[in-house]
Amino acid sequence: MTVDSAREHKYLLGALLVTFVLSNVPYGYVLLYPFKIFATWVHESCHALVMLSTGAGVDQLQIFPDTSGLAMPARGVTAAAQVAISSAGYMGTAAFGALFLILGRTERGARWVLALLGGLMGVSAAAMVRNAFGLAATLGGAVLLVATARFAGETVATFLLNFLAAQSCINAVLDIRVLYGSELFVDGQPRAQSDADSVAALVGGPPALWATLWLLWSFALFFLALRFLRVSAKVPAWTVRSSRPPLP
Image 1 (spheres, rainbow, N blue to C red):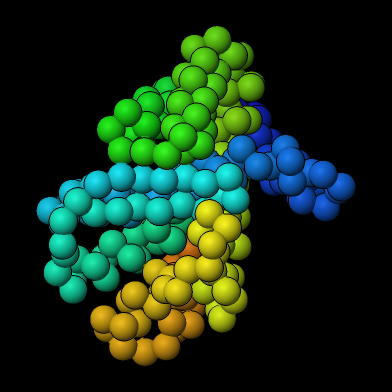
Image 2: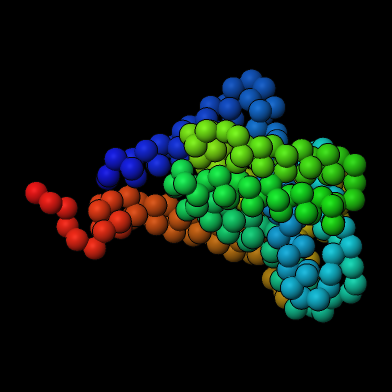
């Protein structure tokens, strides 16, 4: 591993270590709470992205204090579109989490990614989020990400992006647990049908089957992202920056 790659990977290792510690100390969840809200925003935005791509449009997004959320289409959808929309939340969060892992490996790109994420949060707040808490959370997140990208040092920016990646990956897996027979709550109220229930009703099979497939998808993407990071770490810096070998 080169010096550059070792420095880049320490951010991911640090983010995972901090996540583990905060998950196992009293009130650590309080510090993780904003990142859980971010993962919810990613989840609901993935639903919205597929709604837009299938022509259903987006009526509104809502994000609630209990870290649940809703994405509502603007018009009716076909059965095939509904399957894609229902699957997009969990599958999309895993995909973006893996992407953040890859993009967060360099200090140079971290600022740009944070700025882009902040911009997207701001746009979604203005165009789609329609409840008070969701607006405050997304606008606050947008300001924080853009400010970090603009004013923070490279170490802080890179660590934050890696921490967002770690939280997205972890929450993509943990959130699927509620699909295995547990009662689902949205904004503190029981919800009769989950995304897995919706897909099962349209395609067939038990909801647990679809939850398991989404779980395997998440693990596969995380494995591929970590594999990519490991392989890229073994490539000497001079092979990337120059077509000639270094001088003796």
